[in-house]
Image 1 (tube, rainbow, N blue to C red):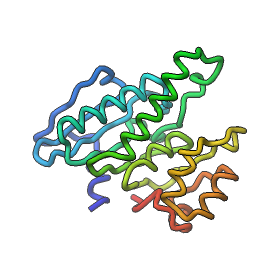
Image 2: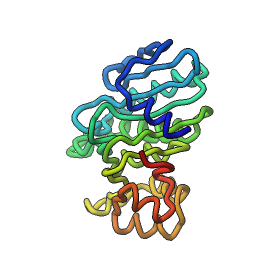
Image 3: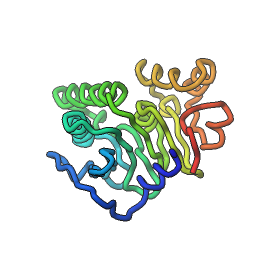
Length: 208
């Protein structure tokens, strides 16, 4: 079933009986809802690599609110990029930041984490590209992850000399064994789909 969901979500074909939900930032997040099933496909659309800046995070947060208010039955989160699901947090948000914007950026990131992790409807991350750092976090917040071959995923912050926030780390520990999570976080491991499956890591519940 998850395989068919993934194929449907990554297809660029039109969906019969569907409608588009608009939002204040609909260019950054494209939402398509199938009226027959009530399932929404949410596509990250900030080229080239869907790096998470304040505007994209705000659009994701607003989209999650819209889906909950409209009583959606489920959501598939994917990317418009052919090679990157999300490259993670936009480093420019943290370079010489303005205090007010930085506060809003960080609180919005936490809002997205809370809303996605605690979503009242089922969520699937259709990972159709590389997904390091914050991109990995988005997928960890979903109930299921379906990942294409030949891409990598993981919280690799230590490779950049950064310590992942405690709630990033907790999200990883909740989806794989504690010991494997400790090693991955320490080394900043980026797993291939097959490597993730070998450590019994539900990053990729199925590979496509």
